Length: 495
Image 1 (cartoon, one colour):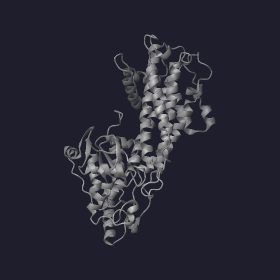
Image 2 (tube, rainbow, N blue to C red; image 1 turned 180 degrees about the vertical axis):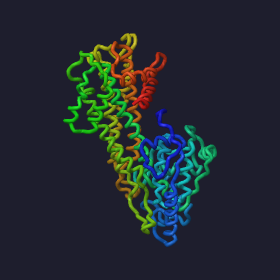
Image 3 (cartoon, rainbow, N blue to C red; image 1 turned 30 degrees about the vertical axis):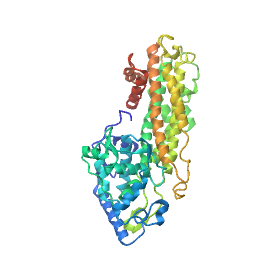
Image 4 (cartoon, rainbow, N blue to C red; image 1 turned 90 degrees about the vertical axis):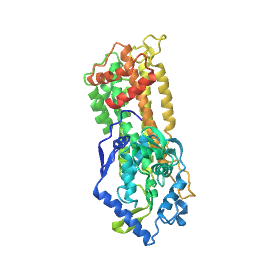
């Protein structure tokens, strides 16, 4: 994860709107305070569940088996039924998800459970609150969820960690879960009734992954805009491509806003007078690309925010209406669609950054700067290696942009006969967002190098400030790879 995420607030209050940016605060210990109404709703839902059981009512996953085995009875005792859930779902594979991602997922799960429609015990909800107040993070493998019936396998592994079984993290250190609980002062969670199913039967991992991707991509649109302005300043381009009349005629609000941001960043810009009337599309159409990205992310934000603040579970309990509603509020199709959209959006922003880098190193198009921005071409090679690595990153991003949201394969004895694969879509989007940071870091280092080897400095104040912030990222004894990562961090802070 980037090292410059916002610091954790002193506390989060429920109810409140959970945003993609709020998810980032879960990387460190955070105090969550549930109001009295939500605590009462959780208790009322839990009591109602047990009233229904006592009345002999059929409740999926509480009195029955799971999935297609719903036609069979479940375990008689609540604690045994919780084990019944977890035993067959502790099947995840692949690398561990990073602790900040896992903690964001459990914050999202808490937000669903605290609405009091799941029937879990108040103690189960408070176990998540207690965990988030420490640096504990369960081990959660990346693969195992198909994004329907909830993110069952990843969340089952998280519950095992909270029980003190398997492994967990304290900060970034992996250890046995029992030791991690002891080090953070947590007690192993005790599950009964519907606790286990309620904890795993939602797409909170999907929503959290998509939310974290969205928060980073929002910063990347700002970074891409700032770097485009700096490129225009370094090359001495005419600013005509940002003229407001163009975007009034176009009619796309987000594109007009990106152009306005570019105009503001280019306040004080003095063209060189040597550039052609029209720049290549990597400059002339940059507002259109950045604006389209902003439009896509605006849609994604609405969908992801709705999902983060909704209830993802089945069945849902409505004691005030005496209703146990069985349905499909665990099917992450909306987030799957927008996660794929985010991946495509990130890939095109990466294309833009790599092509702007290519423009900058080409002496036929860069206003006479040395090829590869080398100080002494042949004796040194400037940013030649950076561009090679950037090309590799772009191709990786293009390959990863294949949509996941329609890769349905029937599973679970045809109980889950269509599934959205939103979890894979979300984590692809998160990887895309992180890789895009490196493309922007690469372009930023090249822009700094262009000023270092050339004779022109940008004249717009905003461009000068960004250039000054980037200056410390490059040093003679520092590998370019480190400079690129440092520049990406600077962009996250400065843009």
